[in-house]
Length: 404
Figure 1: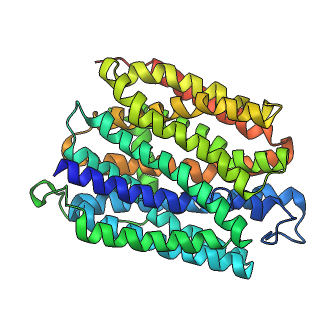
Figure 2: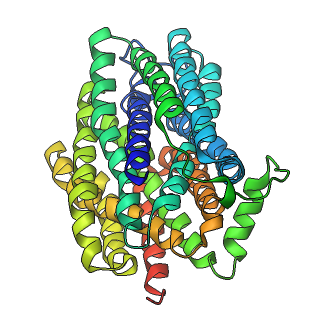
Figure 3: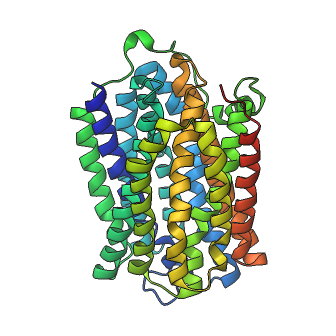
């Protein structure tokens, strides 16, 4: 069952990420390029562009913040498959609504779409829990690397397809219709082919859940005697790298005046390196080094290279910097997840990874808004520098861990 489950989960996450990846080259254009026919902010002062773009990105993360722990616990109680199916269905609907928002040039509809889509982002926590169900200590980091590989393929195919579809049809809405169609394919795949990885005998007791459980999760994350340091480290890393992912596209559009297709190409190259990392480098490196040993090197590299991004004088040097960001980032994410998973008993994998998902979502909900305000006031370089400092602090926390 392990191979079949991993294959379907991988396929599901790839399609999810392709759909999500399609919007990556679109948001900077519709919010910061007034020459685009799909530009949404006509008549709005330029100083608010970064804030509104950041808010659009943040709404997804904020809703994920609330949804991840709830769906993670529901998957512990009712199984992974049912919750995964609900997630892919919601994502398909969200993409269709986003496309409609672009056509009607309605910020309100786009905001609603992002809130709905954030619920579906809990898919990744459920997928992590499914992988934890079927993994052994020896295969855990390697199997979690499949999630990183899915992200990589999504970054390769999604932005490239999104950029070229938008360019070909001269419409920023077109990629979202395609993403919605991919969501329907995902619904069919999960419903008919995904095996249940969490048997009834291992399921948690059914209990009442609260929509505001996410806040309790944050309290748990920072007060749990055994896991607090891991959670804090993960949060700082998530927040630090969120500055890069949230503002790199906006920066490139502003600095080099590139369009959807060129921006898609940039993220495609990032995705290629992520795939190489997860499929090749991760499998080799985890044979010889433990997660803590790997993280003590990779996190400091991510901190330095991501902070250097806005100081590269040419687009060529931006491309040159990509592997020095993508490779250590891919290694860091897989091993941070493996470190957490190996510290939690089998019956609470969904809860722990749901809390971790809440921390990731909280960072994605706070950072784009905060970074948008800071970028508008101090310049677009500031978010990258703050992000680098957050990751360095997380790296310092990792250095304090004792290897078993």
